[in-house]
Amino acid sequence: MSISHSLAIFVQNQSIMYNKQIKIVLSLLILSASIYLFNENEIGYGIVVLLLMGLVILSIFKDERIIKAFYHLRKNDMEKAQKALNKIKHPEKLVKSQEAYFHYLNGLVLSQTQMNQAEKSFKRALAIGLRNNTDKAVAKLNLAGLALSRRRKREATTLLAEVKKLDKHNMLDDQLKMMKQQLKRI
Image (cartoon, rainbow, N blue to C red; front, side, top):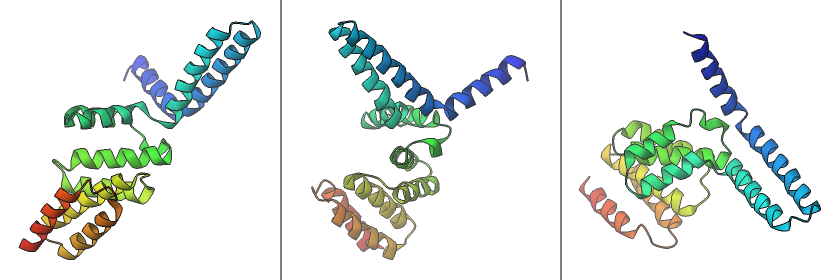
C-alpha cells in the first residue's frame, strides 16, 4: 500500500470522526465574520453570512446523504438511493434520529432484494426511534409484509394492528386492506 493511499484513508477516517466538530468550528468562524460585518455597518453582507451559517448548522443535524437518499427514493431510483446510503460508513456517529432514518431508508431499499437485512434495518430503526408516526407505520407495515412472506400470521396480525393505530391520516389504508386479504389466505 502506498503512502498516498494510506494518507487518503487516514484523512477520510479523521474527517468522518471529526465531521461534527469541524462544522461547529466553521459555524463559529462564520458567526464571528458576521459580527465583524455588522460592526463595519455591512448589514446586507452580515445577513447573508448569517444565512450561510444557518446552512452549516442545519448540516450538523441533517445529514445531506440521507436527504439525497430520500430524494432518490421519492424518484423510485433504488440504485442511487443505495449509493447515497453506502457513502455513510459509520451510521452510529450520526445524530440518533438521523441514524434511525438511515436504517429506515436502508430497510426500504433492501426490502426489494434482501428481506433478512431489510427486517434487521426496520427493527433497528424502530428501536432507535423514528420521529414521525407515518414512518413508524410504514416500517411496521413492511415488517408485517416480511412476516407474511414467512408465514408468521400472529406477528403479522399484531404489526398490522399497530400500523392501524399509527396511521392517523389513513394514508396506508389500501396497503392495509391488501395485507389483510393476504393474511386470510394463510
